[in-house]
Image (tube, rainbow, N blue to C red; front, side, top):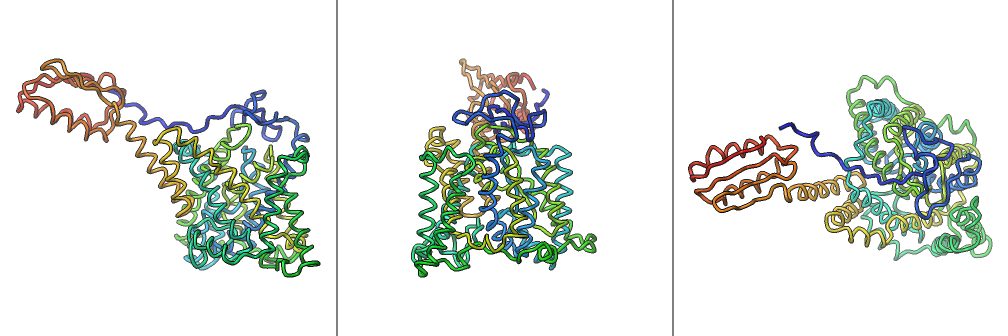
Length: 545
């Protein structure tokens, strides 16, 4: 019997088409076919670039405000120069959207890589040598894209992808609640269960016992604006999204505290802080460029390969997740994305930046702010560049509590109770991998959590494939074992138990004609039974092998 091409991976995306915007219009490489209907509940997508700018520019501003402290926080957690996080954010905004065909994904430094970056810098004893490893990783990513390795994302079950999204939502709520009440001891960008002197839950408990009332008032005001804005007539003003309004009110509120109620005013440790002063000269002089003399060091190449593999996997998973929350259900071409990410990492490494990936937190904020095309990601990158050159002092007035409120609202939209109810209705085979992924991501980190969720998902796939592999038909002294579908090695246990139960003095027919694939181990097991059966006076007839 000819074997099939093994188990076909179930494609996760269930995208209805959408009319593609002019920036990256639909083609054979990605995007939705022109004229296809938008997803249910989504407004029509105008193909004109100018029509989308009123949505994309304000969304880019919101993503910029969220990304700025995240870039700094990830650099801090990685043991890297703070400016390297900003450089990665700028590259993720200005370089990757020019090549990528993902309309809503936003790239930048990723918290999921912080541990690898920290270990890499420590081992190489030089950030400049690490920057070279980032360049090497980018070259390898580019090669993966050209070799069309992006299809790996299709091998992850839908329940795991949905669990990853919900887990990010839960993490945002747990991690940002302390910042919302002014407890800024933990890193603003932290996604790890371990925190500064404790863990996620202990940090949350400490925060509730030491509330900074000025921060609490500003975050509550910001949340009220975020919730109320969508229900008010102001929601029709497409160029003024609620998160931007919340930031403006929070800044004015803190300035009002300074003037009228100094005890409530937030000091600089509760505000956004940039690592350099204003001016392009300060930016250029602070860059730490690659050390090309380290190119012969084996550990640099090992780290480059590690970064390429992990960053590619995280990007592909995030890309799949972003496509799921795209109101127009557009499909992003994964191979093109790997090429874009490879170029981005090459540029980031050349400029002394951290490795970049597609980032679900920024991308979710982008979607929730009403973005329509990848111009919003480009705007966010341009604003990061302008901010470090010209507006460091102005940005230092933004309260972290307000940005935490924006992420809290984003987290709730990713982990709504309705999603849990929907997954429960789909049955245990979907619900258990879903909740295991959430728990694993929250209690470890993103990549480990996905790996655990995937392992549980595979168990359910195996269990499903083991059911009804064969039927047993008893007709007097004749027993027919009829295979209904593919028989893989993990069916051997059930088959051995069946052979042991067969009655002596019988005629057994093993009919494999209905199976498109029978594993070699299963064939060997049947042949062994056929040889040993005469000892029990069992005559074995085999068909289809």
